Image (cartoon, rainbow, N blue to C red):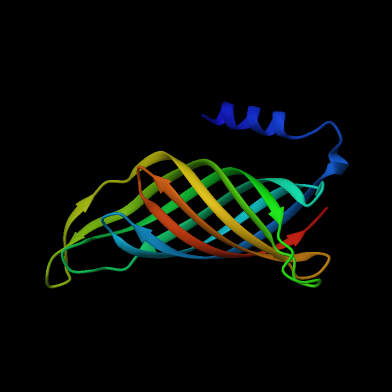
Length: 178
């Protein structure tokens, strides 16, 4: 799997590095996990974006993060870690002269590891513990990004992974390095 991601990155990057921009960022996430209810968490990531050509661009996004759900009666409480690699096509949407966000759609791969899993009884006590498990899923996302200044931008990303059915909305602040 990792070899396939490397080949995707090699084929996506053109011969001239000047055509790509690198940004680092971090943000907060909220979402829903099948069988576990609402989750909250954070993520950090790197984003390579191809310089725009006629209001369109390509973005490679690599993120890592953590999430946890709230303990609910007769449910499963768990924490997890997630790593994603996505490839996205974005288009600039001119709303006004000063407001021109990027909107994009893409897909990729997500690797999710679940830790500290326990079943909660009706009284709110942990009654059964499960071992850690992991899975690799397909992910689909849509994003809206807005440039705040020459170096700063903010992105709102809605993503869903399956078969885990982890759906999140993430608000991330990016700082452009190159």
